[in-house]
Image (cartoon, rainbow, N blue to C red; front, side, top):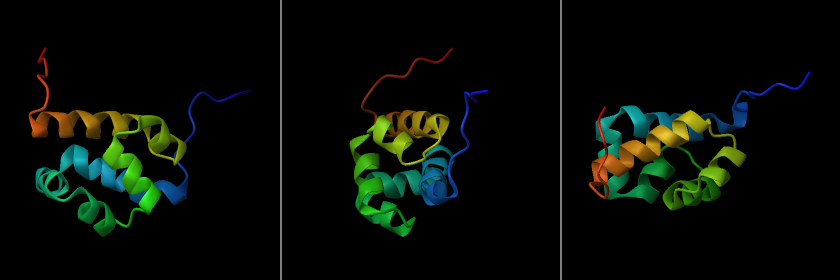
Length: 90
């Protein structure tokens, strides 16, 4: 039987923790927007993880073990906080 869901690997903990903070923590999100590289480094991300996060490269983040939901929500919250797009509310 092939599972349709794979749990994120333990090695991706820091990446998922950072994505969760971007999604949920206004202060961290503001810090990230002001200094993406510094915030990513403070969360313990590797250079590759930080680069993928700054680029908004969903495929690269998921390939590194990021949970797809956290990638989506972090990107949405960053977009909303940055005022770079209109977000519809239902």
